[in-house]
Structures are given as structure tokens and as C-alpha cells.
Image 1: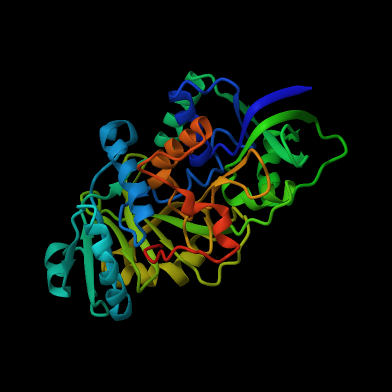
Image 2: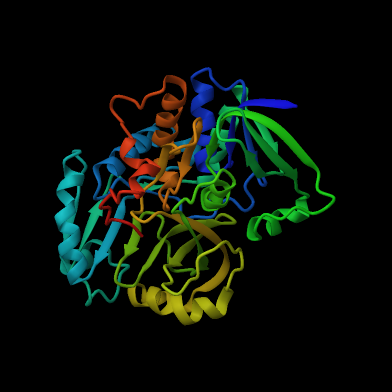
Length: 407
């Protein structure tokens, strides 16, 4: 029987950031990461917008993003971090609500500029119709980076510190109520990865299985965290939600020097992206009819033309002639209050959450990984970053956070 002192389930931005931070503390030996897709072809951490922002309504979220962003700035070239800022566009109702939360951001000495429609048009002439907007905010400390480069950095540092990678192994069973837990993993063929990620756990008769005793288990499975939680008898309030992303090219449009645009009235975000070394526009729409679950199906040109293009063209009229050059479907992992779930799992000794990142994983991963590593090695949160309010226990009595600044 194999023994693994610490098993991290999930090699996305959460699991790898934790493994990296453990390795940096000299605690990488005895740690293993198990994932169907360690190198990230289907990773939600790779299939996202790559935005990094500190603009939140809850202080804990500002702290996490601020500490992480400072790290990204130190390694800006490695992560392709470009501090172009975020531009938030609001209608009347959202403008009033957003301005109520701006003092939270400013309390951390982060700059926030409030713009009228006239100032917005003068500052960002690429925008066309802004008649429905009540105002906008520009947060220059924010920016964007390469999620792929960041995750590879975490993986490299984790492996350099002794962390073992169990690629193409899926956790399908967790037995016991106290450590050591008997964990069962099954081997998945390369062709079976996508199916295993979209179907519920099912064991073929000829599956290659591996049983290990695990002293400490971390559920960092992202959108698949609820499935993993059920293996040890918990119902985790994390909802997986597919998101369509589209890449567009227009010879006259280059958003590279411009911010990451969050357009609340149109429910889209858009930003500069590079595809084959030429500038593109990345755009995604928050489809209110999108069913929850895990799916990598991409709707392509017809869906974009009907639902997304009208929204984008309203803001940048020239994009009506843009050509679609790519796209993908990634996943959000949403909690009821749009904040992460970290720390001990109630009634399951030595099992820990690091999931439910609610589209904030890339921007908060460094600080979350370091805080989790401190908790696992010292048994306590860092003095300057107590994350006890992000415990799974908050859902039972309804002590939800009041986060309102989310996409």
C-alpha cells in the first residue's frame, strides 16, 4: 500500500499555487498533485480572461488580490503581466451601487478614477455608444497576465521542491472518517480525459486502479470540487458554469495599450489578446441562460453573431467587421457569495478546501497559496491574512460575504 502524506486533488491555479508555496517553505517532500490533466489542456485556469484586479467590495478579496498583484509585478516579464488597468462601465443602478463600495478599495490606498460619460469618451475614444452609461471607474493598478505562464511557474517551483505529479489519475474514492484516508485513483487514457471531465465518475470494468493512504487531503479540484467533496460525504455549494470565449481580429483595432473592459450593462468583458503574434480582441458574455455543469462545447460563429457581437459592436462599432479567429469554453466555479472556499472541511479531520474561486483564481492565487501553505505547515493563518471567514462553515449559518464586484 502506497502512502502519500499530502495529496492535492487538482493541478489548476489553486493546486499548483499551494504546491509551489509548500515547496518554497521546504515542505514539498511528501506532497503529490493528482489530476486528469496536469499540463492544462482543459484547465479552467488556462481557459480564462487572465485579468488581475484589486477592485472588490469585500476587504478580504482586496487583500488577496493586492498581495498577489505585488508578486506579479515583481515577475512581470515572466508572467507577461501588463498593468493596463481595469475600466468598469455602469448603468444608473450599478453606478450607485459601485460608488458605495469604492471607499473599500481606496482604504487600501489603491487609486480609483471616477469618469463621466464625457470624460470616458475623451479618455477612451475607441468607445462609441455610451449613451446608456451613468459613469465609469478606471483602476490603474490592475492589469492582465498569461494564466499559462503563471501556472507553469507554480508547477516548476513545486517540482523543484520535491512535489510529485500524478498525471492522468482521477480520484474516484475517499474512504474513512479520520486520517489516514484510503484514496482510490483510476488511470485515464489521453483520449479519455475530456470524457472523464464531463461525465460523472464511472468505473470501467478494466480500469487501472491505485489505492493510497493519505494523511492530509486538499480539495483543489475547481469546477469539479463538488464531485470530489461527495466522495468524502460533503455537499459543497460550488456551481460549475461554462463560459464561452471568442477571439476576434480587426486590422484597425488594437486594444493592447487599453484597459481590461468590464461592461456591466451589456454583461460582457473584452480586452487585448495576442494570437499567432497578432493583436486580437478577446470577448466573453455572461449568458444568463447558460446551464450549470461542465462542458467544453464551443458554440462558435452563430452564437457569437446572435448574442455577443451586438453587445460588443455597441461599444466598438468597427468590430462589426471583425473576423473570428478562435475561441474556447472554460469554466467558472461559483459560490453563493462569489468568494473562495478555503481551510478545514467541517467534520472531516485533515481534509481541506481550496476551491470555489469564482473566477478570481488567477488574480488571487499567489496570496491564497501562501496563506494555505502557512495553514498546513503551522496550523494557523498568517497574522496579516486570516482567511477564517472563507471557511466552508460559513454556508451553514448563512454568514455569507457581501461581495458585489464580480463578473
